[in-house]
Length: 480
Image (spheres, rainbow, N blue to C red):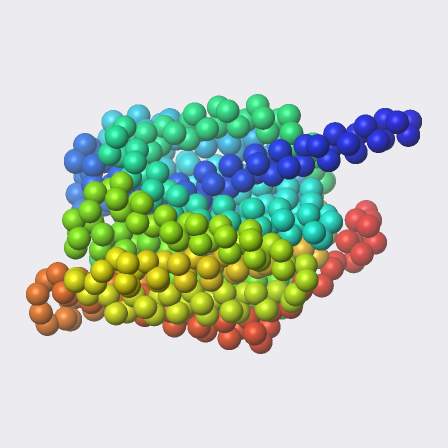
């Protein structure tokens, strides 16, 4: 009997890092699909014949479904087991990618993207919960979250690079088909190396899931329409207010349920709540910069999709080096705010450099230093923040804690990008001068707003970020 136990432990030890590889690939698919089609949009638009007013829906269909269903996906992860939930989500993601890639019309493309987002909402929390439950030793946990943080925070940039390469050399549909190939390889490996868990007998409240989904979707949809119609328009106010009402109803419902979809104790922990806020705020800055610089490279400088993707590569390297080389090594040695607050401020400094952007600015003198600073800063934000957000919870709630972290990330990217885009459009419209100069002025103004958001986030972190307090169930070894 003792020999069997040793064999099981050894097998699990041997598979843990292979499992981390699978989890990282899954997270990379989730993260890069938020941006991989951005560079391909002009080509897809010409192929399917949809107009400028509707092209944003190719991106927001993914983010809306993703953000809206994450909490339900997290609860499903706790109920069905993380490995099962991840493989089901990965299968759906591959099928949805095939549908979107083969889309004969704009409507089918948008439907496929929405199904991708829905599948990702089940994959992402399961992946993050698997890390939290698989790596329990502080040093190994730090390394695992360092790898995961590097992948999560650089996935959007990888998406821009890969999207440019695939669009230019294989065609825009391969930005979607590539997921089919990856899923076909990863699914059998996942079934072999991921730890099997049967889940916990926790109820899944579908009504709460619908309220959360509708509320988050309303907020993201309202923010997405602001650039085209203005913040006081019916197109913004109706879905935005409806989203707030639905979210208020969701929170009220959670207070009265014995087994809520989102246990409010997760949010009552000040350290964990601040970690969620830090994740969301950091994504506001990075995704806002992606949007502005992508247009600067292609519209102002006339660069190709591949060159545009390559121009973001230094930021990817900086994020990976900061997250794995620095944050993961210090994560179990220093307080989380010691890494997160300086990280936000360094990233804010990088964004502040972009406020000096002009049509004649050199890449090496302005943009490259800004990218490196943002990458170094964000790498120190994601790793410890995700660690705080998913630690100290009842094991039965690890999936929902992970889902909330992913929700914060997705809302930060969706709402933040929409807000900054509105700022850029307004500044461009009000600028007196040549059109190109006006466009760049809008970009610079928006990145200044993003820098201010990160500075505010740094202040919040200094004041409130503390390690999450372990739950009673975790203290007593997961009793019950």
